[in-house]
Length: 282
Image (cartoon, rainbow, N blue to C red):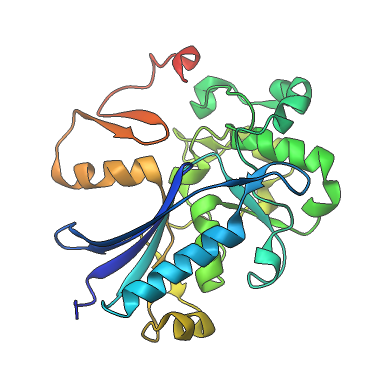
């Protein structure tokens, strides 16, 4: 049996989902399970197959746990996804609306209304993108088309949605809320002016660091997975920032990291932001 330094990483990418058991001290990947991420066409709009992803993640962890210790769980996901939640995380996935596929064209329907409300690039460093690639555009379209769902609901960025399912604890985290969302002012480390202008502030739970232990895995779920009582789940992190993190811990700036997957992301640590061109984001 491994020591409690082993961490189960649930990595939900746009193309594939993975569950890996990682040695937290060496970074070695001890076990890996993968599944394709699929888009569902039923319901009000194209959306991610959350029940299938949940079943895959739990099944993979239960299988891993039969031969290895799991000391903690951390969730890593792609950006441009979020979940409007209402009620119990164990009932109907806790969702007030399905989790929109960011390539769906729906948010373009309200582009004419939304664009004048967006903060300038100088405030958010968030370029205007198509479909739902700006999370604010997703939210705006959903609120206009499904207003009843927003009443009394909360909004979770994608890693924190899965961690909520694990722990029952609501949180917001900066690498996901600041990922080309139009929702975050990075220079001031606060929500963008648009969030207050649209009355969205109360939708978001308190900010927590990515490394925070939000709480133990819920008891019934821990028993189902064969986890030790009190096994913690961390707040979670955006995937490109997760790729950057090991380099931040080991290198001195300036340096660059290229993170590849469904998207290619270039991260320049120690570089300035004053010459960024929003027209060059792809």
